[in-house]
Length: 165
Image 1 (cartoon, rainbow, N blue to C red):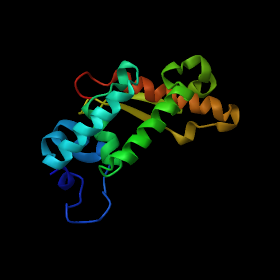
Image 2 (tube, rainbow, N blue to C red):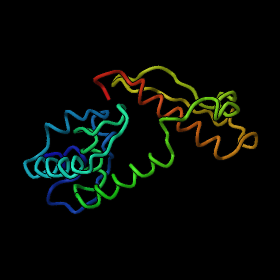
Image 3 (cartoon, rainbow, N blue to C red):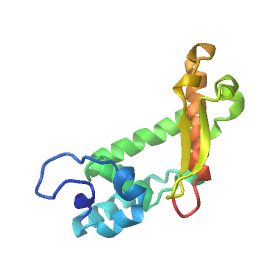
């Protein structure tokens, strides 16, 4: 059962101690294979709910098993809560437009070198390094800092090695 991968038993009412991405180094396939029949049914039902919404996300944020599982695990397989969280995430993406973040919007923050890419991890994900010693927040606005974070995170998602997202 998937619940055993997350650190809590079926009979236990304890909250999960790990997040979806911390399990087995973020290997979603292992989690999908470990799911029990009830969890698989919920995932199938949840995927149908989301498909009915006809939401369009950019190619880096596809509606697939990984997406469905992330929202379900985050909400302990409560489909109503997972759907509400998904709707909030879609609304946030529409408002914030993180996929449009670019270096010109946050040039001062980027020039400080506080955040940088440091290659790929074993699971194909990008490694980001943040240095508080280089952080000079008084030199730019909160909005510029937010755009820098969005820029780096979106770029990291897009540069993750194919097949390992």
